Length: 273
Length: 294
Image (cartoon, rainbow over all chains, first blue to last red; front, top):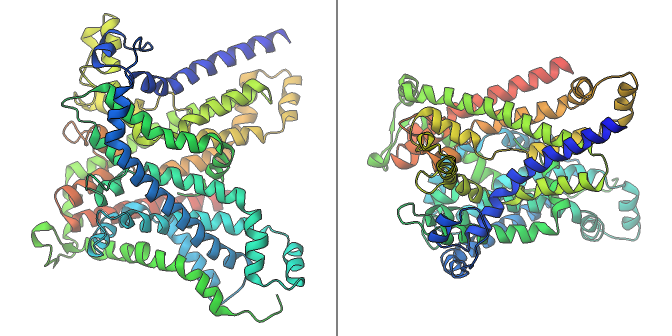
């Protein structure tokens, strides 16, 4: 047993080193957010001895609006994805109807068609619809692509709901909408949460599309805003790192209490290519 | 379900999904093919001209474009071997701690950085490589290694590609990590116990049992990298713009530049189609391999 204990200490040691490097950027981000450029140059890694909170205020003035834009876009996209996918996934899970296989096959095909094929035409389309610099330019395409994986995951979930439960509600005279609202939706809360969180993260993180369609300074998302906000010519590092910290906080707060659902969502959505 | 179903209601429920698919996916996909045969740029935006296969011919003649696939291949191989290797190792080590509190702690701690916005992470690494005040040159300077200091992202192909590849070190945190951890946890502990009874070393158990039993997960993440990796280019766009010269140019960024910087919509679409065909190739290859095994 002695060697098992030694190897355990060894494993924990390696993991601790890996974890240090994994979390280090977060530590550095937060401490640098409170340092002046001079403080950074004389005390590169340490905690700031006299913290300067004014950079946070400055950064919030710059990216507060971007955060708001991102919240609107991610929020509306996720709501749209969950609504649209739950309706169609339920229909695919519970009913047979003409063209069922063909329609589902179409969705399957688009799961495999890469976004890069449609990037240029989608941009032309959104321009022709005069949606450039409108939040809809991001929301509508996000719903279109985001729903695909979610429909797959939801369909499997809905199919696993025991028929007896559904029949018992129908016996009480409940129609299909009653079954959906009273039985299916409450059961599906965890999976809604999982899929919602995965979609929040992917829309929040998207860079190329908002860079193209939300080019206006006041309309863009926090991902693009940060990129533009960082002016390499005259950098005030405290301000840049405050901006990065502020940009991370909403997701951190959201995921702090929902990590379990997020992890489930990530692994069940892994079929997405 | 003996009652007659009202199909109209069913199709009405499917309508939103297929309206979105039709307008924002199917139509642009068809347009991509049509546009790839057009001589269409910002200078003749209103009057695109049919150009047959000209866009494709020009692209295939272009050495920089052809070269971008080799660069992409290098990035993808790196991702498959090193990044997957790192997440397999991290997951394996955590799993070996068993159901202990420490194991649970490490699992959560490695998952937390996954929710950092991608741009925040990229900006940290940009700062890490920044030539004047960046962390790497700072540390080298303090170790007395001034001669090692470099303009990491701009000096040469080796430093620029190396810098992009090292981004995200130690690469444990991520989707692959979660997939592998689930895989290791599903392995029946009695298999390892039996091997241990037979006197097998920890290394041998890892190679013979753990690694073999997570082959499905390795295949899944490899396919994800192969299929998703063909269209990644934000790191290159943000960190090097494909430079210095064309030394970190990947096909996706080449497309982005042609379509949106030079306004060549026809050429951009043709690159999109080529990448689509490449991805289909990988997907079909994968399906075929699955069938042969199955």
